[in-house]
Length: 127
Image (cartoon, rainbow, N blue to C red; front, side):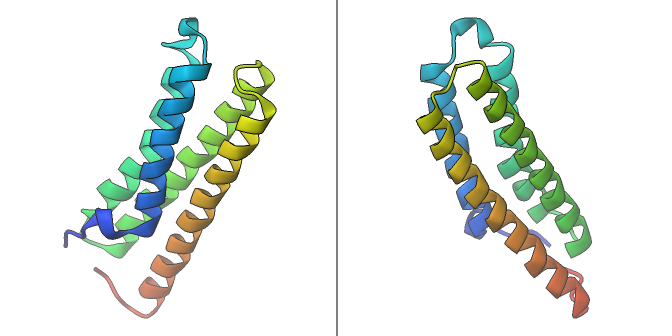
């Protein structure tokens, strides 16, 4: 059963966050990080929204939930890359705190979506 991932709030927030990550990495990171940290953080951020989108096309809610868990893992990866970028001095503390706050909000929304999926699975919904 295909679901419209664009209507899922967790996906919407993750999608908006990807844009922020692209903006940040495009203007603040040094060019020599183009194939290093920039590529890694962008890939991880995109993976959050992409996993939710991919999971929405799966037949069962259990499969969907598995992809949302993968999205959550990618968000943790983003958290580390932001931490590293901050430690390397690519991102000033103020910008780091803003982006980290937004990442945490996406994380809370993804976690809430997982709770909702769990509740649907518990009541016997399969798709």
